[in-house]
Image 1 (cartoon, helix red, strand yellow):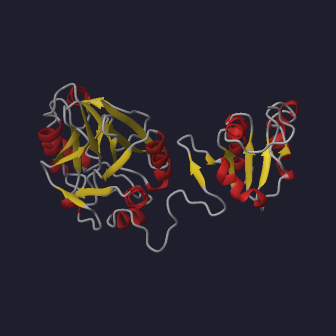
Image 2 (image 1 turned 60 degrees about the horizontal axis):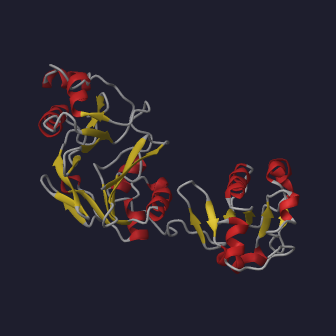
Image 3 (image 1 turned 90 degrees about the vertical axis):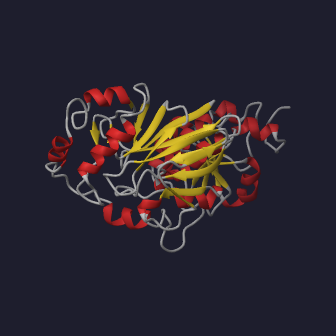
Length: 357
């Protein structure tokens, strides 16, 4: 069975795709975004997967890839098109290659036109394909920079994508209107640039008159992506935080485990966001905890020292996770949720005050 997730970077409207073979737990990521690498890492860990490779559909001009950062964290291989000219990859792909993950694989199809190194990845059963910036939903990638060629793109779409089965689902590299997926049959019929009876010269004329502004991040993104996302200079490990051993959840919350909290308890502020009756109830409370109910947190956040890290706690970790969000909105940067709350704390045998058996 295939595990599949479609993720988005709101800033660049870039789609990242996670595919994994459920039996082996081997996974791949297509078009990871640098700023979202922690999110992707959290999802991979929560699903108990092993990231074996990151793939690029092309050298991006609107965001920096997260490939190098994820390799630094997971040891995954970086795969890019041989025609891209990028340096620092572990494998350079050409038309007809296969990328395997467990018992599944993607077929590599060269689809130049947006850039020289554009690739479309087709799942082994031809049930889905990942078209990058070659074919978009009711549109196409631009062809006015980065080795763009409208005639080449037209041929790529018609020979490598429109030849797939009608039912094949197509997942693009971007969408700017909230659309998520299309199909070969739909695009062949309804794509206003490439579908129906539109010929190659029609398409080229259309593309030559788009007059689009250049992507805002192009001067930063292209050089970085030619290094497969490797930063210039030093960078902290993915998800590292200096004040404690934290983990990052797919829900976007920094968490600290009970043992890790014990290591830094004297240096942090522990804010218990339960109600007073719970604070003195059967579960008890952790020594040094300060009661500040969640309903009062936003109005009383100025009572908390902004210069010291904050850990929030509640019964199960749910309310204290919301407390993390509220404190971050209030400008607190070093704040984390005590994972599992008092239930996990008590289950692990840690001491409490005023608690029952």
